[in-house]
View 1 (cartoon, rainbow, N blue to C red):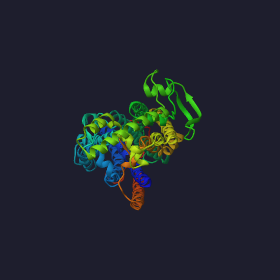
View 2 (view 1 turned 60 degrees about the horizontal axis):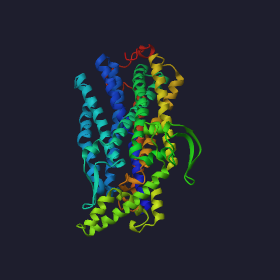
View 3 (view 1 turned 45 degrees about the horizontal axis):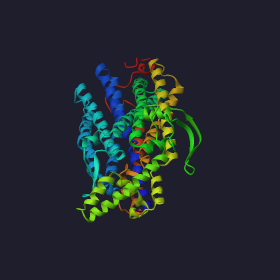
View 4 (view 1 turned 90 degrees about the horizontal axis):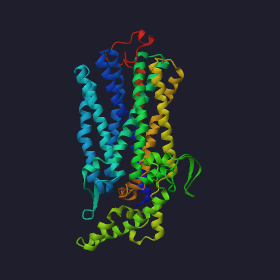
Length: 523
């Protein structure tokens, strides 16, 4: 496979995935914030909470449409750009995606119409139920997609069948209960809740700075402060749990994130700052805090965090085993009844994917020299500087959001909505949660390179046999189309924010004293 074609295929999928993920987390978070806001309306009967819910529901709807449109494009790419991956693992990978479409997407698609057009046709409780089901469906969609992605990170409940030359399910329950997607799901949805909370906080702060619709803005800010504080704390706690899952399932990713070139005596220290050097395979100017990494990664004081050098030696052994498995597969293709080949594959088959790493530089891995095997083993190390700094930037933003929402919660509790320094900070913070979320996906996807399926299928073998011209054409086309959609989305949201909460429906305009008088937090 031409490495340029693989790189272009990866670039195209990365751009579409990162673009799609601009909309997904906001949809996840806003859906449940709408449930909270409408629940207050149902409990209090105050029309302003109906107005609040409808306003943020409009922004949710704009975002929802763009999320669906960009998500469909991504699924088609598995057939167009990653056809061998789809052939090799489609029986497993396709099942969660099919369930997502049949259960979660249809659920939210059914109730989203009732949510938008049922305000005057359903009872208060009936409409609240529709809003709640949209939120459930939206979050269930994320669950099934992350189950599929999590299997790529940790391919449990499956094995390679030399007769069909494909991965096949051996235990579907293990695929569903995979610890990696469980940790990724709770961490991802919490990040989505933070993004939605920052959006509501920032727009509410903008209204307060402008002195417009302040009654609605105060109530929205109060919800955002409480929901955001809980969510930002959850992101940090659940992110720690996600990191703990790496200790057992993706040790190389964890070692790269921490620039752990060598195994340290337990408990390992964490490098807060440093400059990872790929040439010398050391971290210059490292500032370390003792014990912390060992406590986070192993939950103990006596277990080690394996370094990259030791993991490379282990990968080298698995590549040698994988070469033997590759030889057995080739024999079985010619002679399916060969008993010796079947025994050899039963012994070494779990390492077949490591043997396939050699396909990057040669047609027949059985001809590899010890030096080539060693180089292939080092190819299992992802981009260490990228991983190291992406994690620290993401973690730093996570702690910033805790401080931001804690301050917002305190000010809202004291009904101090006039602190202009904080309102300006809230507006300026608007893009930061998206940056943190995108960095999280960079860690997740770059961290498992060079694998399309961890330990099973190298990325270089997963792509379709397309030409560079075809890939450049579609890449430019996607960029132009998505750029136009981004302009439309931003334009619609800006227009909605400018028109304010009372545009487009029959609620009464706010009376003058709504913004002038202090209001209880949930009045």
